[in-house]
Image (cartoon, rainbow, N blue to C red; front, side, top):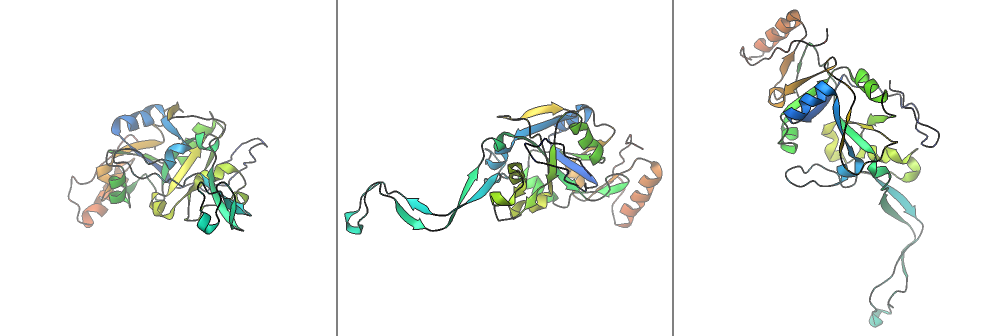
Length: 272
């Protein structure tokens, strides 16, 4: 469980979150090394997730952070007159008794966010892989390293020791929520469209802070709670073991499945 501490102004309380077995962070090797060694976490303003980035990264959701506001009456004001249809310039015309307006909050959109994937299987003494490997590699072609955080609660505690945090799973839906359905506006930043549901995303936000561009925050070394793996090793699976007995057991299972010696990897130095 993760307790969320906020004052009365924000009205965010304990979310009673059941955490996954591990978090996964994808990125370039040079940054993922700093991620583990120094706990150097990159937080981006929520607005970044709603923009389509230049280059090959085309996974942003332009509807993120949006809310629907009911409107009782909807009018338009024509910019040109049309005598044939008795339309006068600037004169309001009622076009609907009921409507819904999609809006985003620029204040909420500046809240820093850190995004992770959820891993539902044990990440120690197991064969780890990425089920959506092909899709992830296509979405993030420049990424070559995956960090597995196998102590998710300890990881979150390191962040909450330095910042006030709201953290939760992303909800996937094709229906933008109504403002009246949310306890707090920040919750609208935890919705994404169904086409992204394979991401199984978990988000960590710092609601008291506002940033205009991505910033790095350090929370201290993650060496005792995380390890890194080349992404290419996760297509079919790789062994992660903290003792030789489990490594030999898992290697035997791999060999029974037809993997040749050398196709499996032994990662030592993990927390025992």
